[in-house]
Image 1 (cartoon, one colour):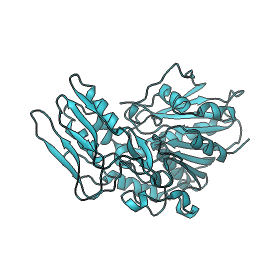
Image 2: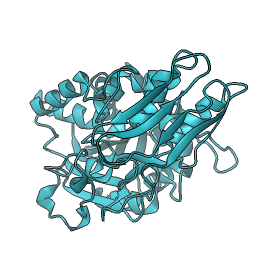
Image 3: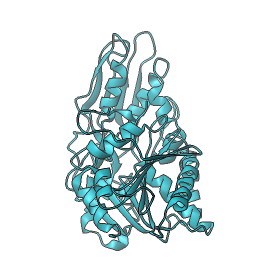
Image 4: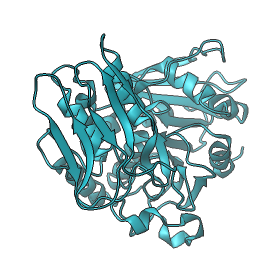
Length: 400
């Protein structure tokens, strides 16, 4: 699978009829990736750079899909608006977006140095990212500060970034391992280095109990060693989830996905419910062993406030891509990045139902790791480019 932070797991495809896909003015070839440069009108050199990092998916960044997503994934043409405000946009892509956050942070660091080297003004940089890209740039800037490197960044932003972890349903993870002998795409994604570092709980095989992966513990410890956050930039964060604690309406316990024809006929995945134990998956296949999967007292994580991902629709598309098989997803979209995670609310845990239901819009500024933050008026798709979130970020950036 390929895709972008704007379209996690590579589900969206560019629609050439909506808006012209602009060719970058410059392409930087970096170790482990690229920087695609889009100058502001009247610029033929960098004068006011903003670096926007791609996020998590299998394979390399797709420049066309990224540009189309930033311009057309919603109601706001982000690159065009930044250019009109005088910003020279650098879209940061990677050769492997499922690599370790630490590895891709090296590419992000090189991109920052390139921007500094090519800028013809002393205007500070703006650096950030979408989804995992927010973690990559957060780590890169914190590491540069620890090493006393002058990154010249005045503002950092994260857009629906899993600062406290991401959620992929245990039901879906179980299915991924169950169907791996015939289609390994989902398992490869879930078992990637980046997923190990980001997921709140992870299954490493069909039989394994979900738990925090050792790589996530190491990543969290490494961030702590760096001081967790860069200190010098103003830190801005936005969430695609609501701020009042109201969830997306998915009914716990209901069938979210079902195979209706083919090899895995009878397989069902259920919307995560609370309780101990709670059945989340009924896995069936012709000629092989059946399996039923349960979770131990989890919150209703598929339904809580947060940026959503069409996780069950992805599973249905994966199954239906094989001739003779068919699957449906009555509830295609589930929570992916809880609001408290995207805004790094201090003292919270996405495994705590009370924390997930917090009205974060009423919390004091001392409850946030970020200096400036904004939630969505509705639970929208993960990294969906919406006017309210983009305009909030733009309002916080330096005006020249």
